[in-house]
Amino acid sequence: MSKVRHVLGISGGKDSAAMAIYLRDKYPELEFDYYCCDTGKELDETYQLIDNLESYLGKKIKRLIAHEAEKSNENPFDYFYKVFKGYLPSPQARWCTNMMKLQPFERYVGTAPTVSYVGIRGDESREGYVSKKENIQSIFPFRRNIWSEDVWKKFFANENEEKALDIFSTVNGASDLDRFKNALSIEIPKDFNERVLAQKNLHKKIDSSLDLSIAGMNKVIFEFLKDTNYSLSLEDDFPLLENEDVLVRDDIFKILEESGVGVPGYYNKIEYEVDGKKGEYARSRSGCFFCFFQQKIEWVWLYEQHPDLFEQAKHYENLDEFFTWNQHESLDELTEPSRIEQIKREHLNRTGREKSKGSKFLLDILDDTEEESCISCFV
Ligand code: SF4
Image (cartoon, rainbow, N blue to C red):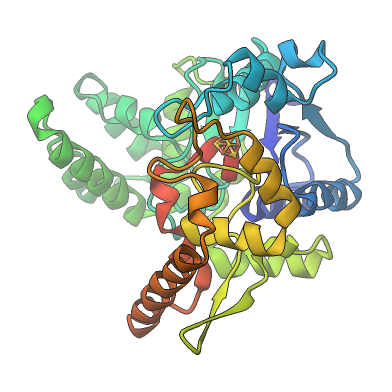
């Protein structure tokens, strides 16, 4: 019987869905609680994916609704839209994520020691969401490095060096000890002005440690956690310690297709034409249909493929107050015929450039804003 709770958030996107399938199939001994945070404004394909996933997993995915909105008759986004007096969320004022995703998640978890699984892929360089609550530990099963940065920082802290060496030689024997000492000797500057170098060196240090042996290093970290407050300190064993899989985008699509759960329809490429040339567009991620993180070409996709939803998105804009989804133009301006052509032309040029660089995925091009996007919404 596990002493910690294992929770897995389903965003409605491809990565978290594939992660649920992968972990259930590979580690049936882990008892997962699945949840999703419903904003009430997802595309139908997202809700379909969640239903398909429930059938595959044979377990309910708990729909989390923001507590305040639960008492109202409105769906969560519309409820908060009124609370915020029509002030639309934006990358700088992301009340939507906070009110409809993070708070319901933290309330759902409560105070029990919890491991939360995050679907950042092995081919992504972003760090991923780590809760600030002490009882929630994040694990990244698709990456070579399953641990969060804060765990490594603690492990590499100067005062823990002797302990780290001790655990390493107990777990892995003395043969690689010198190489591990070399990894430990990589300096992480403390000066704020050197934070870029500090981050670079932290990753160098992590990579050099994992280069010795992923499973071996995982066991060292797991042992080290025993004297900490991290949730996994309560466990006698953790099956993912032996896992050396690194899953990338191709693997995700394969898992979804082979399981029968399927890839959400909005990832399917659709052809468009501009200046007599053909291009392809799609939506790159799950999330609210009006999400302000989407690219201009995705707005055009919404306008042309889901005109009803585009109309709904338009209704939230208030031009008198300058409340628009995009910083410098309203949705009416964005859908002027000449503007649509311009957006498609720019997209076509960009995709052409990326293809000539060797990228085979349209989603690579659409996904290049992932770094600054809402990780707790899309993974
Ligand atoms: S998908 Fe976009 S609009 Fe919806 S909650 Fe997340 S960040 Fe906000």
